[in-house]
Length: 242
Image (cartoon, rainbow, N blue to C red; front, side, top):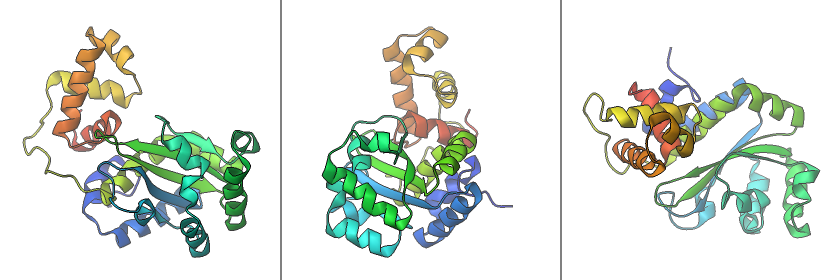
């Protein structure tokens, strides 16, 4: 049985399939986890799609909402996009307490989106080594549903977001062809990253300086053509390197 979006074995397929097929995979993924919508949007240029940011938008939102969003350049005032510029970890959005932190014109984007069933969401900023930022978001019109999915499928959402990026942003160079391109230190560091450890925690665990840890993680990311250490850890798991 073929691997599906959100499974670690899906990484190789994610890079190869045409977008039309990936879009069907995403629809099936949303149905499996119980969510309604997804979107991929470049926020800051880097390895992500060039040109008009909104040309890089991929989503299953209703066409009327996408047209309104693009025509009014809502990405320039959307609080979710604003947060992506500085966030380094996933975040929730849509509650009144969240909206209370923003100006009236920014809140209006949310109030209009609710007309199309986009009420609560979970966004994962994808940050590349060259400073590019893209945002993958999943959303639901039911807050409890979203909360339950994040609790039970959080790791799956994280993997799926990177796999969506892998489909849209092709690697610049082929990966190393040797059986395992990683050194023992690089494998050890990525294994701890896969468990959620920070550089400081890795330094204590590996008896190294933080700069040495970052050096090994940077080397591993380059060898795997990964956007960042988290992407590298997922690719290493998918390739059986750790």
